[in-house]
Image (cartoon, rainbow, N blue to C red; front, side, top):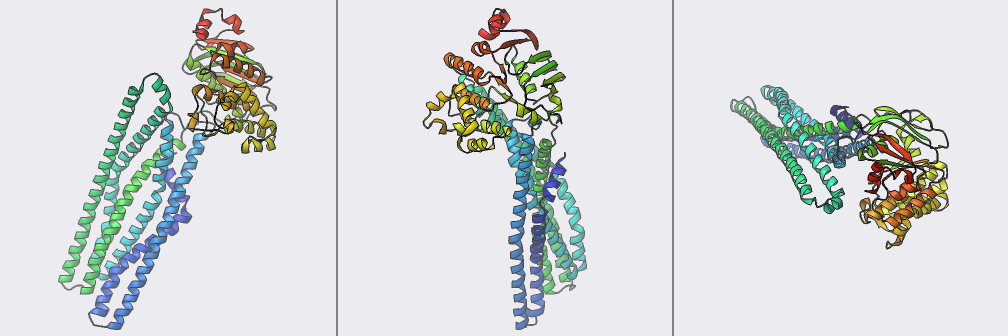
Length: 583
């Protein structure tokens, strides 16, 4: 997708509001151009001959012209503003849908703050093109009407305007090219600065813990200075553009006034026509200034449209599929010859039986990350296959995979809202998938009753999140801050684990779910995990001895492949396994 397509869709999509806005704006400019024409007629038809009746008549005509142009201005920009806001809103929805697409890909190479900046600042700029386009159409209508009016006064004056405007517009377009480039760079650097800021804020607690505040400040200072430099360059380009357009329009108006004055001095036009010519010459400065402004806005809109197109047109990380999983899902997972991540996994063969609690230990964190990505199908392997109940994940729609396989990341975020709502949402989803709509509705509302409520209580007990709720001022109704920052690291982990367990997914993949809890709580969680997930497939990628001891089987990965497997009590006698788990 290209920026031109985004711009075109934004304009065509709101034509019901944009078209009447442009027509009314053109009417306003035509009315503005008509004012000096009427004033000239008043001088020639009423003031010069001393006709009082004609004077009153033409004053009434002038008042009507002002009423019409005032009405047109007011309602034209009301329509244009509505088209602008609706276009920006539609773009935000499209960007959000693309970002949340189960196939992924939109976020590749971008910080979260960058996507937010594109969905807000760039979408607003593209939507604002409706305002600049409406103003530009109105300005062209004013120039055309003014040129025709000047033709009636004097053919040389009219031709001067009508033939001089196209070259002026061409020069304006050339002047807008540097602004377009600098504007694109400005938005890109601003988006990057926003992304870095969001990234640093998200990891503020960790940065303080390791004493890296100075390095973080230096990183953001460099990014901020780059953004400032890009903004200054864009402002300089804007100044050159505006100054150049002002000079061109000023020269053009001066030429029109000079020609009109010479025609009046030679007697080729009357006094009233001279007043009309001078008034129209002064009027022409307004539409030319509007064209200058509209051209700058269009240049910035094109730059923002190109950035939006890069998100909407980003290739998906994984392809869709039309495969079908069996119902219900037994949960047998199989990996054959899987290689990916630049050697993170190399020819990995792994079988997980339905209902098995499997522990996975790896010496390479990158291998753990890629294993989770493959199981959740946020990526496909470079070689080999990943299967669920005999169906290759590559043949399934990613959304279908994630209804059966829930991957709980180590750094999972909580949502702002009540603690219970964070957990109940997963239980409601599970109940709805099972057809228990009543339970799902109750849970979504307030934790409700039925299967969803029981699932929530079981999950909270298994994850020791009931202790977290007991220590909060309002229990499960306590409202959590954004991303759960009002909780400690261990509390946040337990609530996130409870949310994962409440989903009741046929296959649940957990990544280091207890790194921030004490040993006693970890032992309780290990026991609760085994009991809650009885009969359901669970894969725990961790180095916690308590969790690994509770597993039916442990697989030890070294060098991206299976180095050993067996019970935790057996593997702990291996020096390499012991080093990975106990040290």
